[in-house]
Figure 1 (spheres, one colour):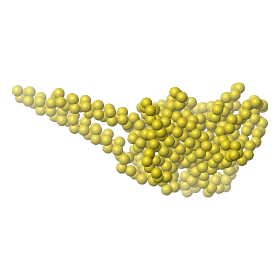
Figure 2 (cartoon, one colour):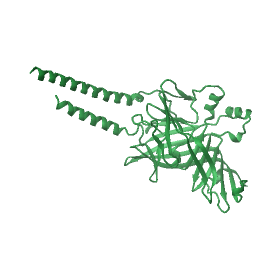
Figure 3 (cartoon, helix red, strand yellow):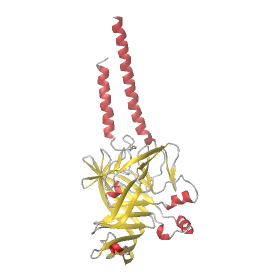
Length: 365
């Protein structure tokens, strides 16, 4: 008994270890995954904001700082903001993630010193207007603001996700934990480092809601929903010429993400993160105007705000929009972990019982 049970325990531990290793990433994180997020324009929300004194120029679905060819741009999007992620080839423990950001009705601005001209990341045919204006900052008198109104803009890029620890990697540099998913078996926890470059952040708060759903139009995101919030951090984004023009100075920022706690998918977020930083989007703020209208005007806080998950497909699926019903596979992690623990407990119980019986026999002898 003493020889057999320990051997079984060793085998069990090896099995569990292999199980955890195989699930270093959630089961669905593999080549062929397509994920689409949206922050949608909604005219009633714009009218509501204007009626309260806001200017239309202030109301955007996204506000981003984009580094293109070493030049920082401020991008304001007034119609829909759509971000698509495609996970493709898997090689040596890494998955390639391709990003496509589609923006419509866009204003792009940058400020540059004399003799430096803005490199274009847009198509000339999409330019509706362009103008320049001298800087009013006395410390940057010879600098010029460039402003372009564009019909649409598409930004693309790619990076790696390291499966072992969920790190976003680009050109050998680790940016931090991917914002696309949280692994239920190796979850993001309070106190853990979330990002490393270009901004270091630490998780300050983790909350799991097991009761309440979130929704967006005809989509429901079922509990459990896990929200993680980083501790406050500061950063400066400056135009990298001469002494550097301050594009954005933030003293107390946080990153907030809400995941489906059962399978790890990111459901919604108001901000960017390592996956976008790696393709040049150094800061981002997203507003789904449809959802925010429900929250602010109709006082229904069950809506997911920020940029929200619209579509999720695995390879071979051809449905355009996923209805987020509560699938049976959502309990797979809990089921298999519970099964492993149960089997381990039974083996330990049998081992202890065998030891006791053997001890009694020895004492009887």
